[in-house]
Amino acid sequence: MTVETLETAANPLMTVDVVVPVKDDAALLRRCLRSLRAQHTRPASIIVVDNGSRDRAEVAAIAERYDAVLIDEPIPGIPAANAAGFDHATATVVARLDADCVPPPDWVTSIAEAFATDPELAALTGPAVFIDGPRLLRAPLAGLYLGAYRLFVGAALAQVPIFGSNCAIRRTTWDQIAEAVHREDAELHDDLDVSAHLGLHRRVRYDRSLGMGISMRPFTDAGSLALRMRRGWTTLRVHWPEELPAVRWLQRGTRLRTGSPGSLRR
Image (cartoon, rainbow, N blue to C red; front, side):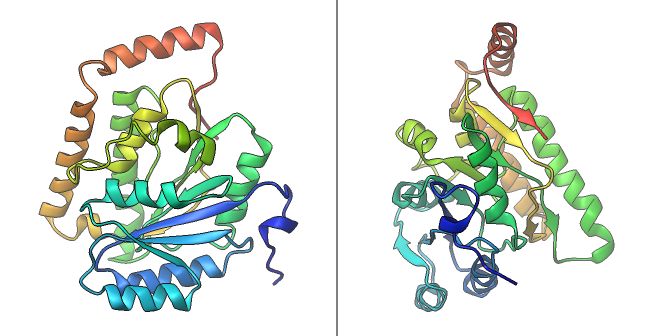
């Protein structure tokens, strides 16, 4: 197999940095970084953001082993860690996944090509499949979990929401929203908050072919799932009343009538 660098890919000006927030997940991080180093198109850089891991020494050793940049974010919570990683990135596009993710070998290639062929694309996201847990439950639970997220969050925001374990944002777009995103509240969902700040005027694409393997940890216990749901509700409320669903749908309708770009699927 020939491994391309981004400089020899279709668009020599398109580069992709990958951000990986981590906390107490050294073993899973090793698997994730191994899969990123096996990409057909290598990332310009891999940025591991340690958010106060008790196993930081091991995290540091793994990051060094896979030639990843390690930075520390002392403010607790994924929103702060995610933002720190995006701030540190310098590539044309910044991709994001979690330490328990395993991207397919063409993940970075697909992201680079999507942004290279669509200059108006601000953000890209895709689906995921569970790669652990009871085999018979993987497909139905993934469909339920991610389908509910897209349905309810999409309805609340009147747009395609990005999924934090499988997404990418154009660097210039991040620069435009970086000061507005909520970084310091650990009780917020970073991907939902970023989705809200992307707004209705930017093009956000859901690509069914952009695959990702994720852990079934949301279903490990009822408390974990309840926590995620509570954080999702809290994140939506942070943007109210200015961005209530009815307000955003009214704005979306206006934009559609005027032919302005916005969310789309493929």
